[in-house]
Structures are given as structure tokens and as C-alpha cells.
Length: 389
Length: 160
Image (tube, rainbow over all chains, first blue to last red; front, top):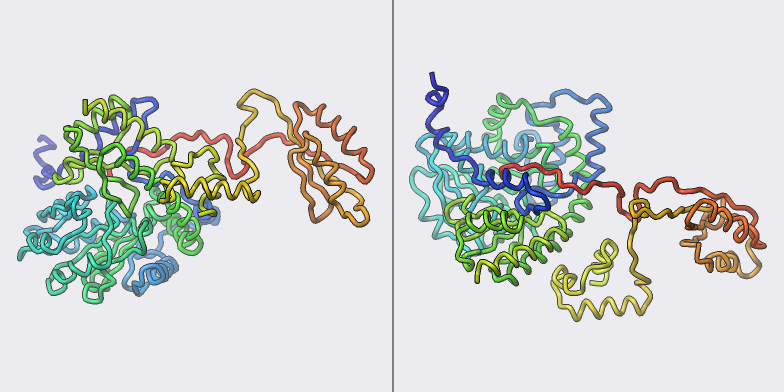
């Protein structure tokens, strides 16, 4: 028996992430600067870490209830109300998950299956497509455009919807583009979605990292709230990536079924992380502000830098990514990233790793020090000048 | 903008006016003007560098000295503080609440030099009643900066 013959075709058909190969290259290099990692460079704030340590010292090492500690769910409810004016019942409408990633997976498993279509606006975080395929559903890309600042346009959405559409994924502030959607942008697509039997999975992991006004969630529209699963978490906002903790909010009927998958697959999310998360929501706000202010300054430096190098870049108002267009160099995204890494030791990620329509762009993160950003821009400047000659 | 500039300069005084302007989404002239104004008003009193002298292989000994003094009529503690802070060896001098009066930070090239300074200069000032000298053995954190961080990016390659 060949193992490979026994693997299900839809698993084999799911492509691996295109980001990986560059990471293998950079590991061998000295003095390389990575603008490739989609993760805060800050350590988890000490007050939060300390609460996790304290819980271990006290021997709090048991499972929590499947949905997560009720104390944490109450804090999440208060946080969602306070920050985003979204009201959820901690008992029935909130589920604590193993990072936002698990929430995405179980939401898709609950609402997408063989024969269904899942609309995924691209360029996009690589997991949506994979998770949809694992469910046997067909991912349908919605190609976002630079000229729309990578915001979803109602006409595009209309064109993607068929009788088989069961889910649309919405993810703003966005990885990889750094785009946001504002109230009016949502109002226009709500017009399209409000009368359709389509579930919205709204991945709002980067909600805190919005540099232009307040974050807007599609669930704030009353006609959308019941059919939207809001996914949020602690990784990006509180720099808690390794703790693996996030949450999903939505209608009790949805949460009940998602909880079933969660319960059978992972029991509950790590309890040390849950204790730390309670502290994060209670007292972490000033630390979040400090990090957001810092990201904002770096964002301006990087955005300004790319435009000065002639790599045109719309102003990204969210997350911690710039998504400059590199077509003026005459290189493809892959060529650009590979040559840049080998010749100048700067790692960026080719835009097409996030969907075909990302070709012609690269993703660069400013979740790294100002010094690194400055040096990386200088190296990219040298590189671009050479290539254009 | 004044506050924002101070926040940035506090952690990096070498940053250029151009970069400050980009970070704060304003123009270079405004940045220059605000900084000049703060310098004139004495809000910004200087630009220094944080140095880990041990790594620079230069021995610098720092001592924190608690000084008890007799306050002088009509001048309080200011007069004696003035006598103390004039010495170039004194890097900082503050009036304190609690069990002693002046907190004095002294730097010298070795312990002997600092001890001599305390014995010959500080302790002999008329209104100084007593001194208690504490030598710094190791600096863990100074001015908000943690020393001995390896500064290595420990994030691993992950697909996201």
C-alpha cells in the first residue's frame, strides 16, 4: 500500500502555502531582514504574561468548560460591547477558541460542505481557501482591486454569488493588503447581502489595528447580525500569538453547533491562555494603545518609503502590512521577492501567495523595528534602482 | 504634536527631523519649529546616549549616595544641594522624602575614586550630617531600556 494513494483527493488538491520556501532561504542567511512574518514583534505585555504564570503557580491546570471560562466570556462580551457596540450573551453566543484560526475552521465546517461555494475576497489570508477545501466546498475568489483600495465592491460581490453560495468571508483590517472597510463600504455590500441566505464569517483579528477612526464590523448592521459569525482574538491586538487563543461570537444556534466541533476536536482552549486573556481584557488596553501608536509611526515610515522608491502603495489603514505594487520593476512578484532576498537579504512575501490577483504586489510587514524598516527600505531602494537600469 | 515628539525623542534622540515628520504625518518645518521652541523653553534640556559601559570595556563605577543634611535658614535644602550638584562627578541630585534628604548619583572610574570624593568633598560639606554610599554592581534596566537583551528575533517561520 502506498500511503499517498490512501489520502483523500480533496486534501491532496489543497495547495500548501506559497510563503514557506522563502523562509527556508532566509534561515541560512546572516544579516537578513525579514518583512515577512505576519506576527507582532512585541512580546506579550508583562501584566498579561504574569497572570498566566500566576495561574500556573496556583495549580490552575484543569480543563475549562468547553466554551471557555464564563468569566472570560463575560469579559469578551463587555469588550465587544465597549469597543464595537456589539452585544452578545456570554452564556450562549460566545465561544473561546484555539486562536482565530480554529474559529475560522469550525465556522466553515459548520456552514460549508460538498457542493457549496465559499466566496473569498482575494488577496487573502491563506487559511480560508484551505479550510473551505477541507470541507469539500468550492472556494470562489472575489478579486479585490488596487484602485478600490482592496475594499469589496457590491457589483463584484453580486457577480460572485450563485445559488450554491453558502458563506462569504470578510476580513478587515486585512492581511495581506492592510486595507480596511469603512461604514459606507459595508452599507453598500449589506444591500447585496441582507436578503440572501448567506452566512458571513467576519474575521476581525486585526480590529484593534485600525489607524483611521474606529473599526467597523458588518455585524453592527442589525439586518446582518444574526447571520454573521464574528471572529476576533488576542494574537494581534495583545501580541499573544503563541498562546493560541481567540473567540467567535454569533447566533446561539450557530454557536451550539460550532461548540460541538470544538468540543470533540480540542475540548477547550488552553486555560493558561484563558487566564492571561482575562487580564488582557481587564487591564491590557493601555498596552494595546502603546503598540498601536508604535505601529502607526512605522506604518507611515514604510508607506512613505515605498512611494518614494516608486513602488506605488495605497495607504494601508489597518493591520501591520504594506502592499506595494512592484510592476514598475518589470519583475513578477516571485522574481522580485526571490532576487531581493538573495541580492539584498530582505524578505518580503509575493502577493500571489495570497491569491492570483495578488500578482504584481508584495507584502511587507512593519511589525519590526524602525531601524529594520529603515535599513530594509534602503536595501530595497538599491535593488529597485539596479533592476530598473 | 509636542507630546508626540517628546515620546519619540525620549526613546531615540538621534532620529532625524525628516523621519519625525513622516512618523507624525506633518512637514519638516513644523517639526523643526516645535523642537526649537521646546529647546528654547528648556523643556528639552539635552540629548544623551545610553551606554552600557561594561560592554564598551570602560570601567565606570556608579554610586547612589543617601545624604542627610541640616537645612539652612531661609534657603531650605537648595543651598546645600547647589554646593553638591556643582561637582562634575555628581550626575544627579534630588531632594527626597523619607529617611534621608538628598539622593546623589556619583560616577567615577573606580570605587576608590568615588570613595575619595565622598570622604573628601561630600562628607566635609558643613551642613552634611551623614552619607551612606551604595555602589551599583550591575545594571539590569536603565531609562526604560532593559540591558542584556540579545535582541534576536525569535519569531519562527509560520504560514500566515
